Image 1: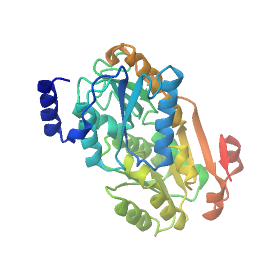
Image 2: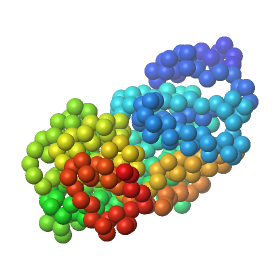
Image 3: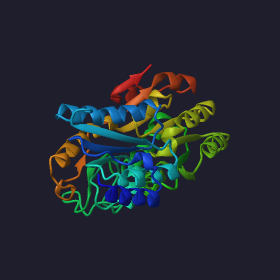
Image 4: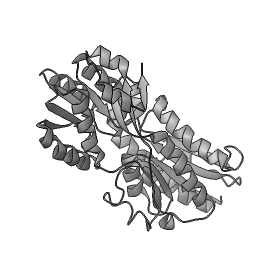
Length: 330
């Protein structure tokens, strides 16, 4: 890199808040791929997502230290850190960036219109305005969706099937996540038919998540749903502990919540989405443009139950639910 170009790069990094030490090194023949994840670096779920993406690329011939390097940023559920990391990654001008889930994608979309972005685990990217259409995204973004918003109705139905006595449903979400409105609307539409009252509960901090869960659980007949998002993912242990202490059935989108002690989940096998995203990243690294790479859909929905948690909260799971489960954790 010439002295003039290096000075220009340093000036750009100063404007975007990237430390000067983070400037990309001269080309070594290796492609740089960034990744923006909403979890903390020590979260097993975040590591599983990243490893699935890395493994997918390795199987396609992209070997770290040989022809590929990674720059990984973790946000620990912090919206401000997520935005800063998005700007930092964009300033490095990597060959592609993985966006893990909706909030990471929105932050990266705001940070760059030129660096290719491959997303995984995002709901309704057309409705979010990040792609023009699923068949032809039309910009610098493509990726893998996880499900549509109608799954919110399935979560309410599952609560009723798990515990017919539930007549109050607390739906907990971070209002900074733009996907939540669609879930809440779908949940509300089906709850009326079950004579269940929906209470959307916005929370912005780990403290609020714990406090509001405890408050909601102080009255009888409650069940809870935690919507997908960085805040809930990073602080799922707090939410699950409060829900279980109040003996409330809990429903989630992903298996890792149930492994952490939640009662049930219904959703796609989300780790598989990152292997799909690796295939799209491979095509971008080989010269194809995100604009013409169709967005792919996740499939293979799974119902996972935690029998230990059911016993802990004093709930006898109906045999019909147990028979339908793809996995029962004991």
